[in-house]
Image (cartoon, rainbow, N blue to C red; front, side, top):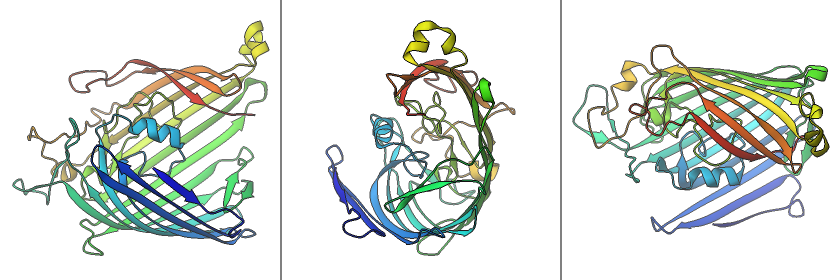
Length: 367
């Protein structure tokens, strides 16, 4: 893969990025082109468009979740749960009032699945039709996402702005998506709504904590890759926005709730260990859980009795997926080590390759 982007020397308010890539196994070209323009920094207003034809991993590289390029590369390495996608999107965002930013996305996306290794996706074209199995579909949608964070501070660099935190106050995000059948080739009509609550705060000498609460629901019928795929992680690296011992495509749902919590002890524990204090190591603990359901109308699209199609697992009997972690960071000033325990869904017959324990690394700079 090779690409480039323009610098502020070209234009201080406009940035263009592009790349081209070639896959040696599938012998196909991939590409992407992105253009962003900042209309105002005083009352933040920015818009952009992009077109991308590439492979992706649903639940990870198809979403703008702020993961690093290294993490994405290692997550994709060796996995079977990938698909081709062709995405066209136009978007804009504006801080309508102090502390409230509204974003709108208009997009059309083509999903193309073909067998890769042990993974093969398929769905019935309509509920009740068990004769025709399809593997491709198109989604045409409009997405509205508002973020209320009235104490958040930002710094501006080039055509981006970066958050400096929310001065310990919570931030609320409201998300709504409408997908349209028979519009620009779209195959399904459904609605998604969601709420997210995030907060970072300090407990003085006891350290700091950060939590995220989410609740999302789908109204309508669509193949499960267009619904919610819980974000697994089979890479060597930990990720704060993924379930680090969950496999890719392991759980799917059309509605779910989740809760993530991490507590940073800073020097509360490590400062009592002479060597750790000298090295300035810091300790932490975290917990992640998620529970969701899949309606029968969406399950009816899945060829569950077809041995040639791989389907996801579902949450059962009100039991959430839960993992607990602890570890040390600031090793060599940047390295983080996570020790993670998966507490639920450990049946290897229903959940092949489920790992009850894992150790993962990450690079974190925290001041």
